[in-house]
Image (cartoon, rainbow, N blue to C red; front, side, top):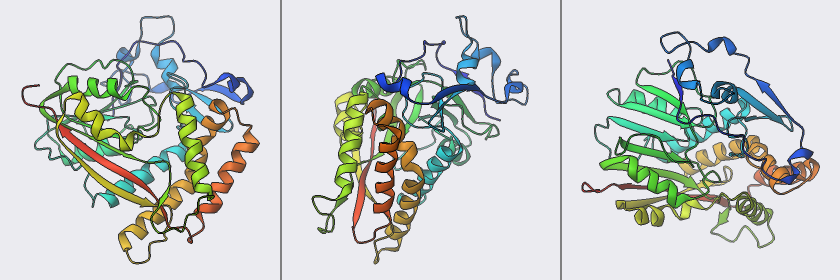
Length: 354
């Protein structure tokens, strides 16, 4: 059974992503499963005691509400802090990505040489699928997943639980608490990565490991099949620009190693990988399969990735944004362009004397 707790008291609703927010079609709706607010000993996945705050509105209500915007559902807690929706399609896309990472890492959940971990933290857990798999793989460990949205399944391994938290703020876990901290696809989510890694360092036990897995949003090509005027260049530049305006960059994949070392981590290792934009690789079955999954993930996911950023941060009309997304989908169907998204898995250790 999953347990949801809150790491923070209720916070004022964040400002909209931009001054154009009022132009978007938005409504806020309560979660239908209000009957689930029982104590931890009940069958519910929610801990009503820990969800109560010290202000007028309970944190429970702000978590269970959702914002509907341009036909997509978004989290209401810390409204606007994250650009992606949390509806069923968005959850499916997150699970696609999990499958792709397993293919990329040869069915490994991590590359860091973790041995017999007792406490594991999955930052930005999403659907919780990685945390659940880790709880199964390490049944003696306590696995905690944090996220802004309570979209994780209710029934999970007994050594796994989830907390609603904004990890861009001060962490409330005990110091030197975790043996392994895992971060994946938090690009565009963190306003200050140096502060984030400092928090991770403080809450990792001496000798513990941290691993971050991220990829670029700018497609690359090695064989000249993507000309200088190709739409993929436009796509990448727009995503980077939207992230800069949003105040949360999408370039952490190429910065992770330096930032981790700056935070004090040692034995830092960077492992590069590539995700083809579709199934264009003909001579590498593994890469071809990953490309097919990436094509599916992007075809179904580009709206969730970009619609809110384009309309509320960039000030685009919905029609202009949808035209931009349609052009991306069209390019994803072309196998003449041998493009890919580069990425990195970076892991490091906190010194024993740290």
